[in-house]
Image (tube, rainbow, N blue to C red; front, top):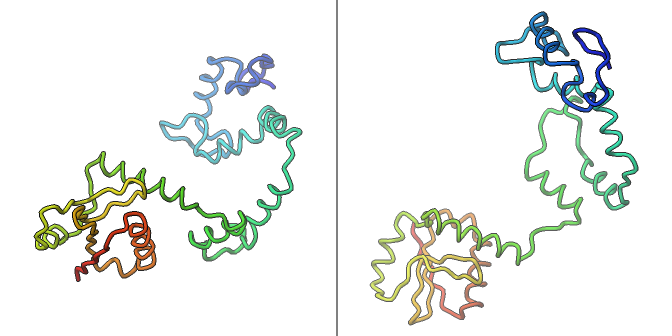
Length: 224
């Protein structure tokens, strides 16, 4: 490969570095003084831009360099994909349209998740993984000091008049934080705001897990 400024052949040990277009820093500076346009598309450069007007131009130009293409080819040389990997790649692209082939409405995040789950054999997080995520979030909230307390939760629990009531009680084994827990009566108190109408299934599952673990009574107080 030859230098873009003086057209001398570049040393072999430089052809694998970022200096493949110039034989020296001096040539690069001289060339840039004479050419203040993008190397790839010819657009005039602004003050902070050195060689390319955009990231896409730089990527397109480097992809055409023989050295770069050779390095990519060597990296993929001899690499074989398993049948399961090939099938997963094929299934993950089913139903997709190229962005430049008349795609009017992009695929929603929910549709992507469903499609990826089908491609991966409907694999979802196990209960143990979900528990670990809850424990991690619980520890994070404790560090930052941001408990999730409802607007009227404090007043409602105060009105119960239970001296032994523990607020924001942590159930370490399950990774849950309950609004209130009375250890003497082994009773859990939860204040459900209006948003809990949208999470009834999750709330029921959470309540069942807590009851099975503690063997307690579960009292729900609705805050409308």
